[in-house]
Amino acid sequence: MNWEEVGAIGQVLGSLAVFVTLGYLAAQVRHARQETRRALGQDRSEGHRELLAQARDERISSVQLKADAALGALPNPVATALMEQAGLTLEEANLMVGMQIAWWTYRLQMIPDVDELPAMQRIAFDNQVRGSYGRPGVARVFYETYLKGAAHPDALRYIENLLARPG
Image 1: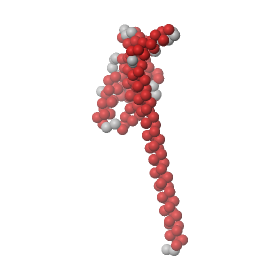
Image 2 (image 1 turned 45 degrees about the vertical axis):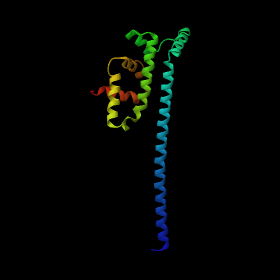
Image 3 (image 1 turned 135 degrees about the vertical axis):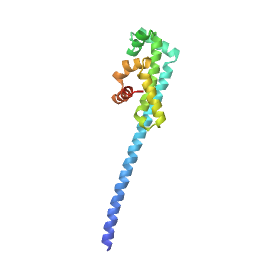
Image 4 (image 1 turned 90 degrees about the horizontal axis):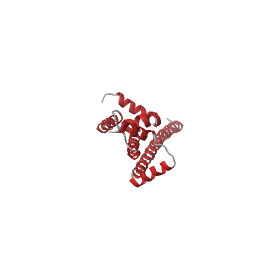
């Protein structure tokens, strides 16, 4: 074997090393992008829950109701359904809507990564979702009145698949 052959083998091995390095780098970039998306989603959810907690403060909610009434705002469809079907006041219905939005924000954060949960947590999460949206109650009204028309199709598909399976 002469030096030219050794050099050619070295170049081939060097090229292979470059491809392996580029593949590894691509995988790292993809992982970093996924982690960034997950962190942004979690921050959004936490901020949303914090805002909902503030909105449930009696002073804030009473001022909101007063301003909405003065400005001619109509109750949202979920609140209207809760007032008609459950006999709640507008203030009570708005509290229930706020709670359901907070629960939905939590669930929406979990659904994309539900396959990563340990088996016991996955079963508990699925049973909780099935119990909330699969039986009569406030959560079911929220699901039927709001989520079915506004939620992301993948999230709806996940819930519909859960509801279709026996508990």
